[in-house]
Length: 503
Image (cartoon, rainbow, N blue to C red):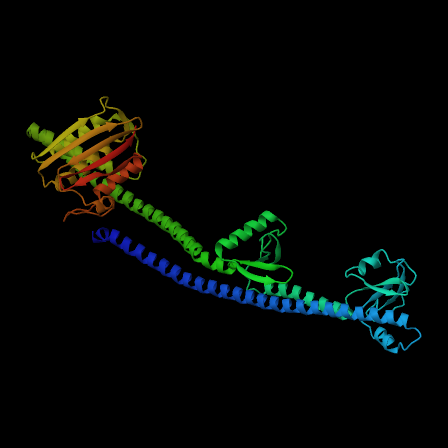
């Protein structure tokens, strides 16, 4: 039938079409993924530039603070000099020095004498409230720690030396606090707003994490986990290098967002799920179709056996009538053989769909019986030969009737392939588990692409025929005898069918 001759071609077309759909989908998805990856990289670069620009601003701010420190020390030095002059010129005009001392309202200072006793203090609180009295107390403990950031300025007068200790001015301290908060909030903000891309900022040695975002549930205190994460990010993308105040050269490691990763692998998972679904659906439909075909086979076989029963019974009666009328004995025997053959065929059809009874039978004898029958039903131009290589003729579980049907079907097809002129050779082999029957003809061969199609119901290369012989043979061998039947080899010089049966 034409549908079977084109089935393989349609399979190739459908597989090619499916592959084209999958390929185009993956190609388009890859384009989208690359665009998103480029967009994420651009956002990380913009983010890194923002960090760099802010770092430059902070660096300038640091220089400004350093200048403020220098100016504060100059002011404290001037205040110390004014204090010395105020003490030494007690009888002169000291209004100028007094104004210098009074105008210091932002720099906390302590005047400590040579005995390490606090003499006076100023601006210990930002509001200028100096209600805390420290005069006369020793300069030690917590107050000494607070005023020991900078070297004290000595004040020498009248043979003794006092020391003026100071801290950063309240203006400097507040500005510094604002800038530190701004830097910390900036680092957190830029990391959080980095387009959901996992980001890690490390120091120049790539050991210490300065900031991180979108890392997931990993423990950033675990050095092993951190190093593995950084290495994985470095393998995916080249780290960016920026300069941060107080940290120097820093590395920005990043990887693709989880959304991009999902988009990259989602089509593959989707096609895999669809493929599994289609495979399961195909298996279910194929199983249902085979079950339906089996029901059709069984119904046809039972009906055929039933229809043959009536004429066979009638033929048996006619044979008995012919015996009583003195018909030639040879003719009677030939008619009885054909009637017996019809009974055998009827029994074969009646067993289709039923669990056949398998009985151990010498395999060479079973093959020989079928060959002998075929010799009487085939032209003399076809030569049959049997070669038993087993040396022991092992008994194989067989349903002799059905097994003979298989051999007859194969031999009939071989005779047709040879156009009624050639040779059919049957070789029997065995091993510890199986017995093999090879049927070889000298016909025109079977194309390699048809080796499996010939066992499909309805497939035939002849102008007349149902295409059921090899399909029935396959069912008998595989379903009933739990064996295998297939084309072992084929060429323009002939074809070899192999039947494998369990011993």
